[in-house]
Length: 314
Image 1: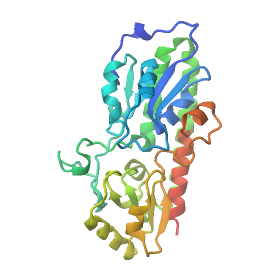
Image 2 (image 1 turned 180 degrees about the vertical axis):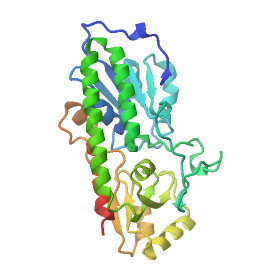
Image 3 (image 1 turned 30 degrees about the vertical axis):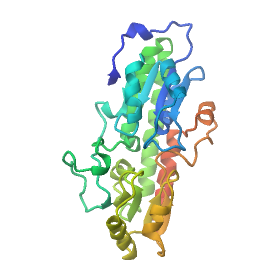
């Protein structure tokens, strides 16, 4: 599904034009799009992995990149809402992840301790900390969603560059096969620890949790920019003190002080759960990744699975 419709003729390319300029809002999506591109294509990332998408604002350089784009790919579920106003001033087609037909969508959960089965749809206005967000925006951490985005973007690239349609389709098939193999590998890795209870700093991992049947029992905060209440910290700290939690996951782009408020003076394990690929950004051997500040999706996903397994194992 495209957020903006443009005529196909406006972006029809002649066989002499070798590359497509693609702009992506956030780092995990860039890691999903890069395997579809060749050395002549250009991939522009607006927000690199080391920066949080929460509260981000576009700069003139970002607007310039958008106006140069022939395809824009964004998340579209609140996390990159800072891009919405700019869409009206560009002419490129826009793929919005959250609007794709066949993806899984989960509702935003409240912060604090969760009871078993806390995955129902909440009514409007029940989330004071995220009033503008109903769907959990961390869509890329559901691997089936990731596959759907790859397929949709592949179709768009084939439309924009029909002279290399077969090459794009081949890259798509190879990447989808790799993602499906990765899914089986992670499923096997996490099967031994999926009943182990844990806390997260903020609820960024619900899709990953549901996909692999993990036992998350609460989050310290809902919005990383808003401090949790004293009552919530007290409630979660009591769970840690009562040995009802085996691991608390921090995130590399946020300070540890809110984790410490829950874990200080205890021997609970502290893990690192990275939804954006912060720890590996810039380490990729590909030209685009090293220049643009993101890591390949397979590496991001496998690293997350490994860190979860490492902290949850007895």
